[in-house]
Image 1 (cartoon, one colour):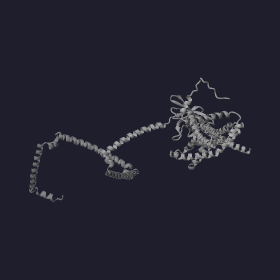
Image 2 (cartoon, rainbow over the protein chains, first blue to last red):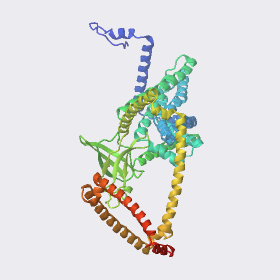
Image 3 (tube, rainbow over the protein chains, first blue to last red):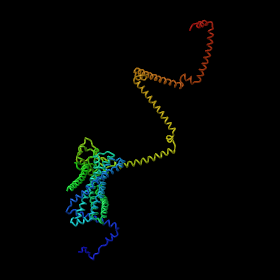
Length: 277
Length: 321
């Protein structure tokens, strides 16, 4: 019954690693441990996602709850971003006599960077916290354990579906958000000046390259994956009763937002490496 | 069930909206880069592409007609730029069109500007090559401006030295520049010049009138200029004057000869002028003539009173003259 690994007495267990980690600060060890747990959690996701049975209905349900229900928030926020960015940039460009460049500048800013990052942060706040809180409460109320007992794979049913949903719907939210932000920018341009709808969008698309759009679009999948992964991880590993639910939701937002920035930084480096910048 | 369908429909609309927006965006970008239409290739060679890169716009007469497709070195001093041009513009671009690298606005992206060729040249074909022209770039312009600035610095230094010298020496130039009375004199002079110029204008006007009158044959001058009879007379008079002057010339020559002869001691005149003995003799002779005439006068007086001639003189005295 003893399942512990047999260690041969003549072979000494290397104590170098333990000694090395003992030298590190406790906070750093905790951080590395957390990073390792998240990596394992992600690995489990990739393992489970390819294995049948596939929970399509639950994926669609989660896509609706996560994506569709976030549309209004994302649209309003994006509209304001486009409007404010244009109004704030306009005086500086007017000073240089480059007012005609406003659509190009705002278009590049929104499509390349502002749209994806800001919308991903909003999603990290709304979606990450809701997943963290939902899974956390399921955990503390032992619903997950009950699922396991009833023969349902809770990880596959709860985690995989949610991560897939965020990975697929956040890019769509970002595309719609970018479009709404550009429309907000168009309205802002017409508050002071007069630029036709056709001219505005022609200038925007003329200034854009595929190398602006494609990397920005690809990184949104990573944003979605990271937000879903962190939300699920924090909720799935929630502890300490109802208090832990709030903590899970909170840390899901914080770590999810941080990961968005880190992924953006890596994406910029990769884009630059391949010569798209 | 209804709830689930409604949810799925809304989710489907949400996904399709996102996909459509993505497709429209990508299509618009591709269209602006001529990715979906038929194109043809044009190439040209430059020595310096000034930062031109693949994807930059190509403009023909200010219209975006294509993009830069390829940039490659053909040798160590020549760079080949291949451009993808929208096929609908092939009927406008002539083979002697000239490509030049420019900038979109003052600080914009680099682009290739194609200047239209002349109508007598044939139209370009696919993969044909056009001429290129080097444009002065900003760097060269700044270099020239830098040199100009240096020259201006030297010039201002020299000017400062000159003005310092003028201030220090207080010479003529200083007086000219600083003396207010001189300025008034100059002003006065200018007023006079103005007055003189006014007079000149008036005089020239009068002269114009005179010449007009003379031209039209009025007045003495006009008559002189236009009357042929008078001109003949004038010609005769001039001829007479010429003849008189010739005679006078001859006379003066004769006089000169006479004077020469006198000077050379020949003739009686020379003796009268230069020979003092002769002068004395002449003087004595004149004195003698005077005394002889006195005596003759007395003798004649005596003859009048003589008995033989008294009646004759009385008769002549009474006769009217």
